[in-house]
Image 1 (cartoon, one colour):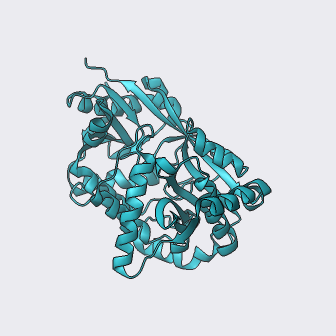
Image 2: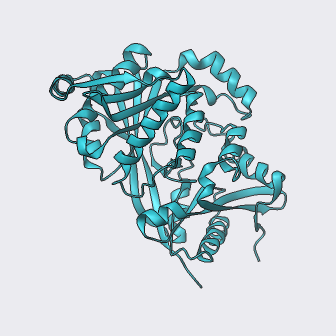
Image 3: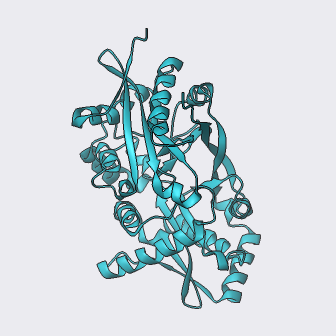
Length: 379
């Protein structure tokens, strides 16, 4: 008989336990960046987050006595299944002590919940979708994660694989340096493309409100078109994209949100973010006030940025527009903001074009994240 219980989250007290249990797991880990509790509540709020207009989620807690020793979410993303014609369910927000029996019970609870809803495959981790934080860190535990990237103990891969999950896809993170990306080849290529294609690059407008809404609509159209052919991709609805844009606007620098226009027509964009995790890592309580203080006092000390998204509409791909965007955003990060290092992430391991572009900037794969699949056991 097990000395722990698995139960679904019910009520605000359980939800807070679900969110805050990570403090007990990571308290001694100096590379862990505490989440902002209010942001996690917002992400998990099925009423406020438009992702749940087309998806369903159940949260589970593992308790040993009064202590929470694990958690997991099970997600049915109907938009994913309609897009890809499959019956894949997802797990996410997985955290667990180093105890295989607890992990197995959490996975079993999520798997049964998904099986009851007709899912035939379990995939994860995603928190709660590929448009959010995704993947399990399996290589690169030496430093903290960049903004909106996952982090976990290295024993998680053992817990997941021992339950029967197998690798589905790896997601790569490249480290970039100014010396590496500002090389003669990239400079030559981007200059040629600008001239040949009549390409210009401008920063998105955050003000006035009408201009911001116009550029958000442009970004959404490019994003959905550029990523549609990618493995596992699901288009974001107007509501979802607006929800994301409103959040990112709080930390984004307009100078690093770039739109490429070919002869005046938007064809690509790039989004770079300051790695505010360098400040938030000091907010050990996870409160909004602490986050505000950390950002106010430490934002000028941020030395790296993340290229979160970069894409080009399919009919204009293979013209070198991606090289122009990489060059432009890298130059702005280093020359305009003084960042000494950047990260391009994440990139699917088999996305030849995007990996080639990162390699052209002498990027180094320094972190690897993994998505796992498991066939649902219906017994």
